[in-house]
Image (cartoon, rainbow over all chains, first blue to last red):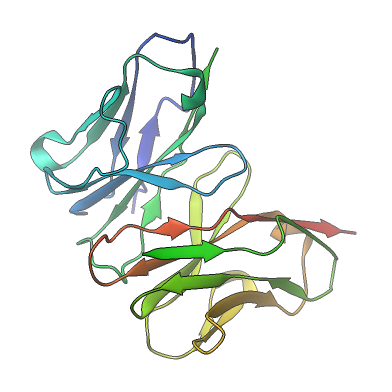
Length: 115
Length: 114
């Protein structure tokens, strides 16, 4: 079974530029999560989708971050404009139904450096 | 609200020694608890999880953890460390009501000395 796929793996941009990350979850998984992991910290949820609807985006900085999951499969996370503090690893995860006790499966992440 | 505290950002053990990584949680309702491992430049991999069945949970690679409600703890142990266990370990909590996303601790980096 293929895992969660993410691209690109690495991205370097200058502040005020825009960037987009892509995630393809495990086939059949209804729930998709985007987490931000700043160096030295644990991952923090940015947004959670159930199929193509948003379940929780309370910690998403909506003035610069946006995300979509058209057709309820793959997803794109965008930052525009980027700030220095956005330097982090962006992890995508998926789970079968979004039930609390389910395992969330993580992709390899996209490492973003904002200069 | 839920939160996780991992005591010790770095733990160093000798190969063959006991591994003990500490995790305490705070939750207003009975939680589900997870341990994930992260190797360099990789995503997180589930080691084990507690979902209100047996309090002693066995996971992959010889790791296990015990849920202790009275101590609000879910410490991770392994009897004998191997060099390949060197990685970052994250404890996480989730509740069955309200916000259903994982809340992670800040992580513990495990070093294994030869």
